[in-house]
Amino acid sequence: MPDGNAVHVQVRACGFPPGFHGFRVLGVGLVDGGPAFAMAGGHDNPAGAPHAHHAGDLPSPLVKQDGTAELDFRKQCGGSGGGGR
Image (cartoon, rainbow, N blue to C red; front, side, top):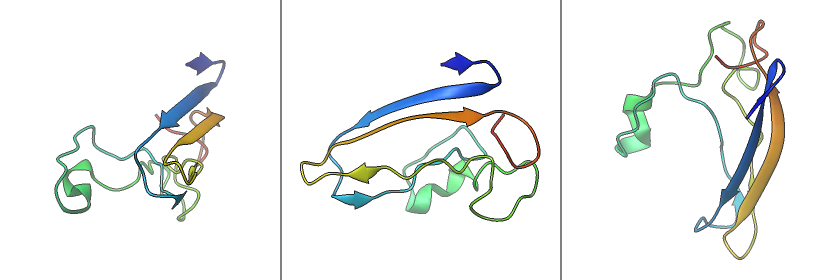
């Protein structure tokens, strides 16, 4: 959801193994399901920022023992290494 100069992201997921999982925006809007989702490209990183500061890096959800996870956060848009497109 748009929120000023940020995007408000709400995620509810189920059916995953417990533990932390990566959650990110990739550079290409195409996911093929192949090995490592190679067609989707790398993390969205228009500013060339170092890893963990890529625009597409998002908080990692912690999946509970029942296989569910929830995230609710705001991500700043634009700027050097500080937000997605």
